[in-house]
Length: 247
Image 1 (cartoon, rainbow, N blue to C red):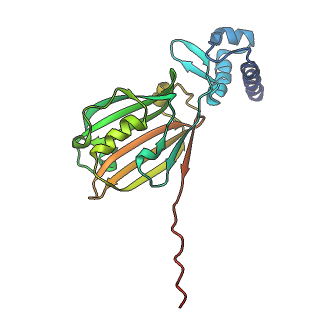
Image 2 (spheres, one colour):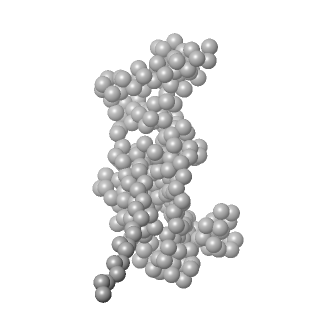
């Protein structure tokens, strides 16, 4: 029975995938309701939802709460450039990607005190940055900076490099070190809803901490990049060996 249900789930996913790839169901189109699909394929609603979860995990279908399941428009891939370089090396540099920015003043607590190496209740500013391609969410970043380094005139919407990062760079001191930690994980329920992705789609979670020349942490960023639309590239720069002079 377990094998039969699993097989049926994949058969349904294969059939819907074929209809999407051949254009019978077009990008942006709403799929029939789950009840209608379950009736069409003569399966239970849980089996049908498992089939849709496969397509959601592949980035072919997105479930918008309260509206239904829609065929995704193909999303362009972005590249996160790391390797100890300055934060403006993050390249969402594409005119089709725009970033909405929401700022919130808060006090450091929990993991933020450790990330920014500050005492509890120190004043911070959070910048919640959600990038979009058209109307579809693309990636998510939460940036935390000490309150005195937070710009007061950030745009509500901008191109990433020309807006948020450029403005932050104007206020912070020169950087001495940028430490980045990259891990693959499943999104939290909140991240899945915000990015309209399946909870089974792996994301790249990048924690970036920038330290100034005085040793002060001037920025901590938590980035969530869905695995179906993002790559991370890290380059180590080495100096050529010096050759001894011939006597």
